[in-house]
Length: 428
Image (cartoon, rainbow, N blue to C red; front, side, top):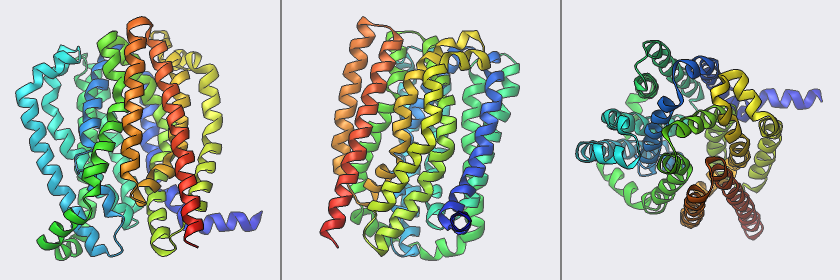
């Protein structure tokens, strides 16, 4: 037993997760501590506007780098990775410009289609959010490759400080959703500046010397499976994840969107505390193991089982006591957030334990398979929401959505593990 504990203490893998989790824990802890206050100074409609704005940011930001950020971790040489980083940053600037043009031309139409006229005034902040999120993603994976987990941890703390530091005081001024959306934008911007400063301060000479126009062009072509397959897959996945917000806004009311938004936001905190940190470290670990040994089946299987063990008890608690917990902490008007959470937690739990298999698919360049997977997932989820939205209530819509997500996650985990086992047997 003592030897096992000693090995854990000495494990770089565990230590890297702990470093990332410490920053995430502090940041997420602030979000949780602020939730009972925010739920009383903002109403569900305000959270509905935040949910729609955040959904738009999420959908666009996942393709802000055309998925080249994932390729930063893969090259054997750091010089090649630096050129991937430069390529990703250039693409982010291009995507920011495209977003600004779309907002300029279609701001009112977008808000109208989403059933929230108030949202239109906040869409001017969308290009800024895309710029911050895109650059952060690129710097995030560069830091992961270089094992700079401490600076990633620091940036996450600053993001939460920035978000809560704006949302709380502005909320007390009773100006509606401005505080929530403004805090979200400010938090992302601060995190990007902090991570960017640390990266530039420590590695500017190496990055500057490594960058070459010729290498950037070569990398752009050699890794074209990321924009060709990875971007559509990520876009579909993001749309699929955010379908409830758009469908609830279309079929029901902004208030229901707000109830869903807060439920999803709070459930993401404990699961995200581990999964975000774990994803960064496991992606680096799997890439490194694959480059050295070529076999990662055991690593992925153990990681999946470990995450399942960690998340099982929290899932049971929310499943049986969600409404009581939400009403007690947030107030009686948030009762249905707890009802939604009972269904959401099942899907989110499977998404949580799906982390190792999903990042493994990126390492083994299975983007075409994941793209097909996402196409079928979004078709099933969209059809389910349309039917339940027309004939049933919001609870039924979220329940069916979650069950479909759960089923597809199980299929993905089993399929990838089966592929890895066969790959290992054939390449012994």
